[in-house]
Every structure is written in structure tokens, then in C-alpha cells.
Amino acid sequence: MNVEVSKSSGGFIYFLGFIGAAIFYISTAPDFWAGALGLLKATVWPAFLVFEALNGLNV
Image (tube, rainbow, N blue to C red):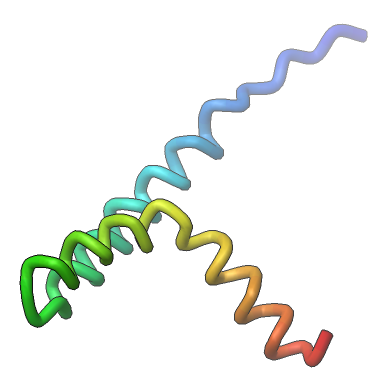
């Protein structure tokens, strides 16, 4: 049984999350350097998500 599974949708969802996080962090930044830091935060937003989820579960 040979079933082909597309693995490109995960990357697209991550890309959309990156764009959304970048827009959020840049729009709330009070100055340029906070916006630059926001772009760095946008690249690692899944780590923030997992950290907060585990923190909320008291793990």
C-alpha cells in the first residue's frame, strides 16, 4: 500500500503564523528596535506557544 502524503501544508501554516506574529509585534512596537526584536520573536513564536501551554497546564 503506497500512500503519498503532502507535507507542504505544515510549512504554509507556520509561514502564516510568522506573518501574523510579525504584524502583531511590529504594530505594537513603540520604536524601531522593539520592532526589530519583534521580528526575531516572530520566528520563534511556536516556542512561546508551547511554553505558555505547558505553563498553563502546570507541567
